[in-house]
Image (cartoon, rainbow, N blue to C red):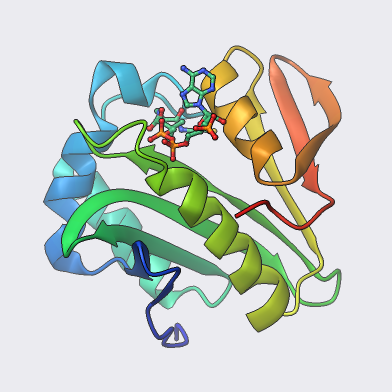
Amino acid sequence: MKQHVTPFGDGTVVLRLVEERDLETILAWRNRDEARVWFKSSDKIAFEAHLSWYKRYLQKEDDFFFLIEANGRPVGQCGIYDIDHYAGSAEIGRFLVAPDMGGRGYIKRSCAELVRFGIDVLKLPNLFLEVMERNRKAIELYTRCGFAEESRSNGLIRMNFNQEPAR
Ligand SMILES: CC(C)(COP(=O)(O)OP(=O)(O)OC[C@H]1O[C@@H](n2cnc3c(N)ncnc32)[C@H](O)[C@@H]1OP(=O)(O)O)[C@@H](O)C(=O)NCCC(=O)NCCS
């Protein structure tokens, strides 16, 4: 069963666990052509499949999926998953900004908060992510958050966190 996580944030963004009532909203964000092409599984997802995924996610203890709120409104999503307490590692990702909310720094702030949550709360020093090498915007964002390229193959770059993110 998934551990409860008290919402956290930096005063501008709040990260709280995704709930079933959020699924339609985040699926609509994710299914936009300009968004889905940046995910490894880039096909459009039907609501029933999304709901099934969410129900499986609820049973997992190694995966936390967050809705990002600013001024009480949903502005994006992100997650930390494949948590391995033995290796002290986890992947972060599923970053997505809501339509018309891009470029306001919400995702950069959320990335910094997620890193803090991973390192300080979950005690996982080895955070990493994967990003398509064509996704310049995301790569720049992750670099600003303290990630650096570790390796690349098949069009994907793996980046490791190796410094405190700038606030
Ligand atoms: C990637 C994404 C999440 C960024 O969201 P955003 O709202 O633009 O990001 P923020 O405003 O929080 O972050 C701003 C940072 O992103 C980077 N960035 C944003 N737009 C950029 C651009 N056009 N070119 C280069 N870097 C850019 C910069 O580092 C910027 O920091 P700065 O303002 O200090 O320069 C958003 O574009 C998105 O949802 N893309 C589709 C899904 C996706 O690609 N997800 C990542 C999968 S790995």
